[in-house]
Length: 231
Image (tube, rainbow, N blue to C red; front, side, top):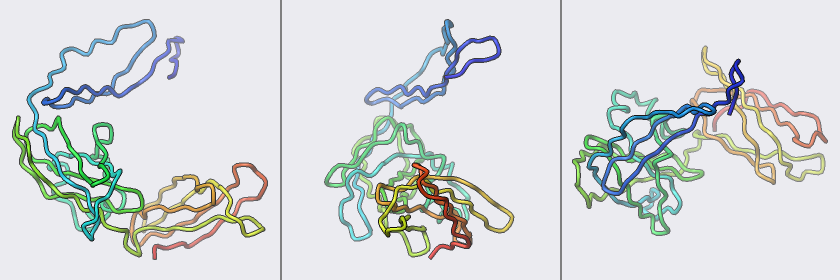
């Protein structure tokens, strides 16, 4: 929430409307204090439904994977490098608000899908994203079965490590990552687990990173490691 120059409070939220057998509708809405926001009619048209399983590269069921569908046209014309990057980091086109989770047997069900060509994506912790070939859906169609493979990370797909204190014991820390590749640069950050361990997928295989670890309790000074490369 925030307030503008006139002191009127406002907030932005994501509205998701769903009904079984109908398409889902997602919309970003700006709310203002003491005002009614008119959205107009929201039409939920007849939808398709599909089901399937999430497995690893050995065919073993993967429980708890996040599974969703994306308009296949949003992923057309991608280069091999871009597809590989999506495998490591996913895509902004993947809508997590309307996604579901796989069960203990890897099974999942996706409803509310619009007619047209879609790809099903899936992701589980410490694994690459899985992505199917395009599937052509029509309204009211059910019973389509798909399998989504979420393979292990390759040796150059991620960077992992541990932050330790002077006693050699793992310490929780905040990691800042400065990435450089060619003329492109990017900075982001994340925290470690309670034992100081961290892992993140790389943006590019030819990237170099500068990692800075900061103690959230400010008992120890910052530590910086430079020229960190995938693999």
